[in-house]
Image 1 (cartoon, rainbow, N blue to C red):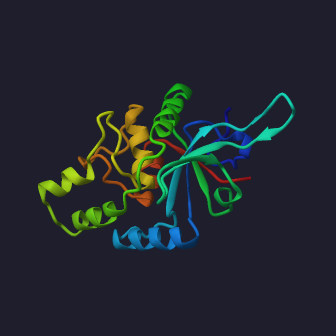
Image 2: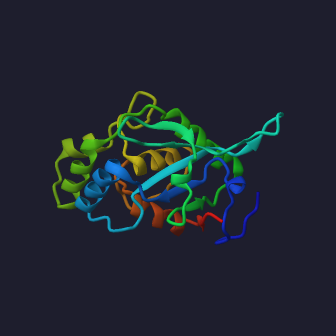
Length: 200
């Protein structure tokens, strides 16, 4: 579906591979916000997730919302996109890639369901930000499973890993795989051609 750059999205406009950004509430939001402040990420986006299935109407004329994959403290989960992810404070980025590549982003996000949350990565990334350059720290941040997916991931790491596995080079500044936080990811996706869309 073609939606002009900057035009608002309806839920039916969302497609697999679209990337959502926004706040996150409750105690999870408090924890994530503290972690991002530690990293110096002052962007208003505290959370990122991948749309993996479009909305559809079934044979009984029942409408089903889009499905997303998002990293959460209980592990990466596959859930419907609820009202708390569809507010005036959220924005969605459509990648400047073919439909097939964006579907691959969605497929890789789905493959990371259940990935444990990267609680310790906030501290690890903060140490790097403050100039700590230990080899074991780099290895800790970029550790992966035998399948090449992150062993643990915060939300932005999961999104970046899905893009990377689909062949999209989000960052070209020599940083390690998974050395990414939500604010930096949002702006970089725009720099490489992504278009932003707010909920209609």
